Length: 224
Image (cartoon, rainbow, N blue to C red; front, side, top):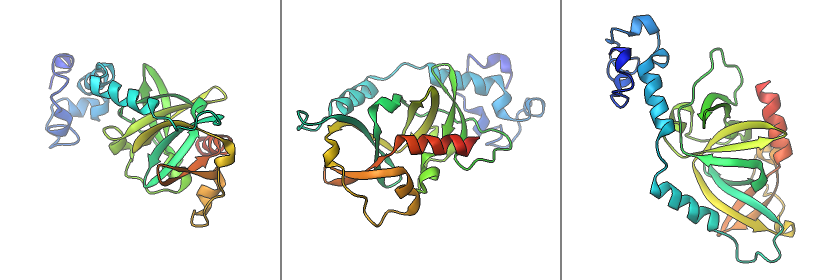
């Protein structure tokens, strides 16, 4: 396909038919080497990033952010609960910039870090995308390819450093009294014990409370 038509036909999905994901018959492929280098592919990516937020998505987040524990009078800490693999985890709300819809993860050449997935574009800013599941030793289906279309991406910030990580679901925010945090169950493996300071009960399930300082320190070390 001629790159000049990129903006006019961003939804042709040609990379899956005649590009690297298809039969490789695209006449431009020898020139650009990989579909990621083609203006058609880039134009489609920009179209996804620039698309309007849907009414359903806004409604979903309105409901999630409104979901609070009833005992708010004694609660002193706000947490965001999310699902990663089969586990429910939580981080302090102040760690989060925002939660965004899935978007393409652009792999880095000669990547050596087991937790660094690649780069993502969030509102025009290029951010590092990490695998929190790999850091915690959890099984998750959200590899770089799946994260581009499934689940949600959470944008976090600590000490002026920003990272993005994919999760299966975001279940909402709620407030707790620190006295409600319980000791960790013995069934948790070593990696989770290292980054989790306790657990809470939420809607009949156990939620691991992550230690944001330990988690982000390990992220910095893991991608250095």
